[in-house]
Length: 464
Image 1 (spheres, helix red, strand yellow):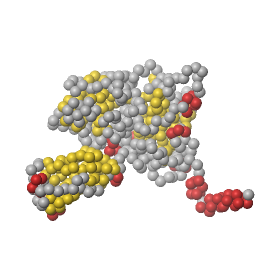
Image 2 (cartoon, rainbow, N blue to C red; image 1 turned 90 degrees about the horizontal axis):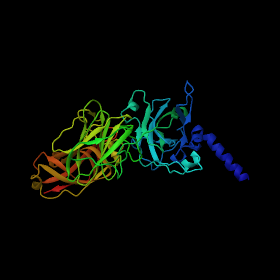
Image 3 (tube, one colour; image 1 turned 180 degrees about the vertical axis):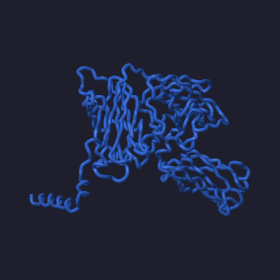
Image 4 (cartoon, rainbow, N blue to C red; image 1 turned 90 degrees about the vertical axis):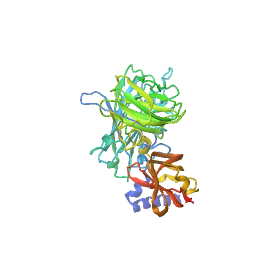
């Protein structure tokens, strides 16, 4: 008994000795620190007495990061988070969640659309019990807002907000985060407002989801796309620079490799995004384009045989007019800033901007290796574009510049790539006549914050 008293008294003495910092360290995280314990929004009355909007107060000072949950804006974002749930409704909804704080420090927001929950048979299961039976889906954020999204969050007085049109019987988990050093409780606090507008009678258009049932796009003629009443569903990857309240998909499996010009015509189409891979993810987004004026949205992409291209057309209107999607082979088409009607929010790439995945990667993790450079130097002089095999590990390298240095420290070949990833052969334009000596490949790329960084490279050797 005396031992217990001494232990407890010692702990209190240590806390008192260390001061408030130790007390805060021992404080427990908030109850809604994780997605499985997400809190609810509470309704409040407007001046007219109508409970239209809902509100929540997020306390982030003791919150912790989420393991296994992707961070929309790289490792620095969502350093500490809390979660809120918008329950499923029997009809579709258009949701807007806005976050504000006492300071101008950035607030990160992400929305995760949850799997469909069908109405239970009689007797009715209480809503809270029904929600607890549904696992939290947090593998793919569907809408994100933060300081890097290029919108209101980047304004002089930032206010983060996410908006999406949600199908019936689907809920949403909202992740609220902050970054940087932990401040005081008042400065860490975030006020959230939720505006949920019911949309009775909404019928999602053909191709509203990206799955095996997604309709195909024609490679020979324009494909009509119905955008009216489009929604955002759980498999739809977030593209913060090109947000849309609703999206519609078309899929194309190329029968031969080469460049393709992808274009969308129609004033109701507000964004164009192209993904390449088995399924669309944030990592395999090739690029995205926003509408800025009248005209087509365009980008030129490199297609590989039998590797699916996923074309996502976004719209912000419920009563949107149809659009036309066209995919045509091209050898030398040039796209300027996303096409006649477009604006590409990133500095390079297929739509004259970097891929969306480049907004959330860590170039400091990238490492480049490859076979040792050997063989006769004169053999390289046969090439106008010198092939070099490389392997990129750890992270992608975006807006890459490659320079092959040789004798006397001169650059013998150089090249540029929108994105380096995995094993590949890069083609470098030959600048000088190769001669015997030591050679090494130097690679730089652009970080998610827009800074050019050098990437460690082990590609080197001696040509005889």
